[in-house]
Image 1 (spheres, helix red, strand yellow):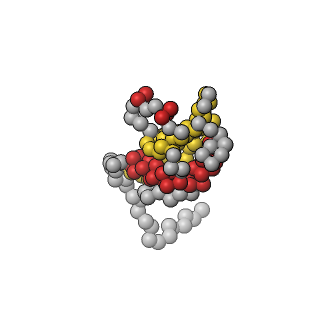
Image 2 (tube, one colour):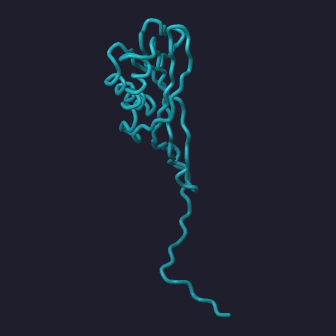
Image 3 (tube, one colour):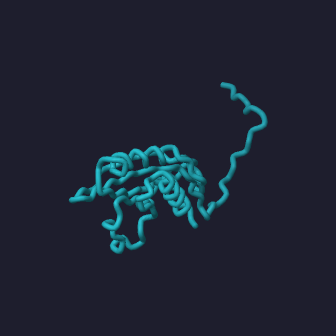
Length: 158
């Protein structure tokens, strides 16, 4: 299992523990066209949304900071009440915000938006992010190291 899959699985497991039992919680399906949301009163589908990289060292990019983003697609049949969108959005937020992940920093909330609404169906999208290390297989050539001066340089006279 790779880093993306390990982190996604931790998010899915956290949501399973904190969402109502009527909710279907899982990774986003490989074939979304075959997944029918009409079969569920509530669903939370998690997928990797991408990353941004930052350099930690201007001379060597073998190790970089990786800001990873995960998206939770939430589908509801109602807005209010114990199993409504508003209550479950708050449960998701409180369950994920600052949740520590093995192999990355704790989750940080990025955004949530109403993505779509149709009769009897409400769809929200929530984004969370974490920081992880990105380590290259290729470490690159060894760079020359400047010598360390053991005594102060001589002063030049005018």
